[in-house]
Length: 222
Image (cartoon, rainbow, N blue to C red; front, side, top):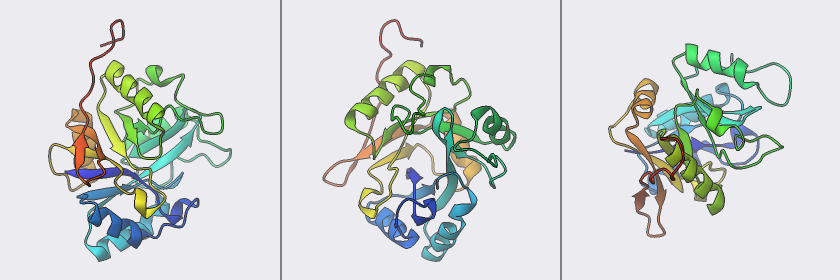
């Protein structure tokens, strides 16, 4: 099962991608489902869920949270109760227990991309609370994805992929391969926790290539 775990629409506030355009693109690229991760609001994706239901296309909802440790994808939240009322970002020590109490998981997105001075680059190996790492991001440079792949090898966490799309053409550029079919957020989280997932990317011919975890470098933690 192929799922793009990192998608944005106009409800993220930084693009004009209509939900129906996103869904049509996901279908055309052969995806089995998508996950909407609007910026800093789970509730913002509610209209997208309505469109997906009308289009009869499987859709999950998460959120991409701007934290003091960089952007982090949260799966399993059901509202915006995790969000701090003031400030540019939410502090991870506030967000983490709320997500965990809901049975959710945290996954650093594009961990080696610097945004506004915030990044997981220098703290990724200390994040003992993350369930997986976003290895492939469709908006990353090749170098940024290579760094994330190296971290994936060293940390030996499950690896996932997402397009980080803001335009229809970018939908499904990077995705996550699931060994088993999932139909609920609880199942999606369970498969990610179990490591029955892998990052994959779309080739120019439209086929998807699953990426295998490289061996950890000598001297790195196993």
